[in-house]
Length: 92
Image 1 (cartoon, helix red, strand yellow):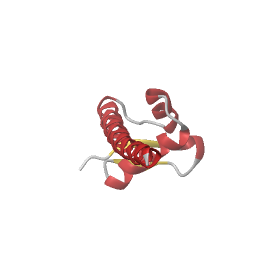
Image 2 (tube, helix red, strand yellow):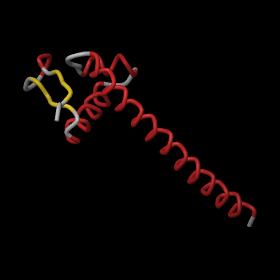
Image 3 (cartoon, helix red, strand yellow):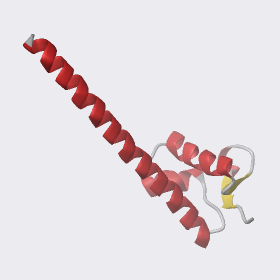
Image 4 (cartoon, helix red, strand yellow):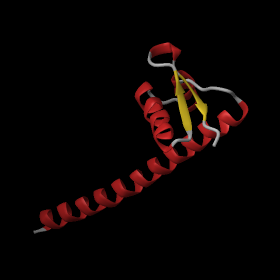
């Protein structure tokens, strides 16, 4: 019986820690997206590599950040693929 109670407690703690961690990660992501847009206020363009270095994130994470901002219409991609790709802030 004690084992079952301990398992239920462990699952509950794990559940709430997971939700708390997810909230922190989401907040961090939103902060990074805002910082990318702020960077583009004073710079003409930004690249995937610059985003990687700014936030010490992987190539895939930097790409996801830039893709999300592009999908929202906040930035536009310049170039097709590879090293020639950069992003600029959309002006409405």
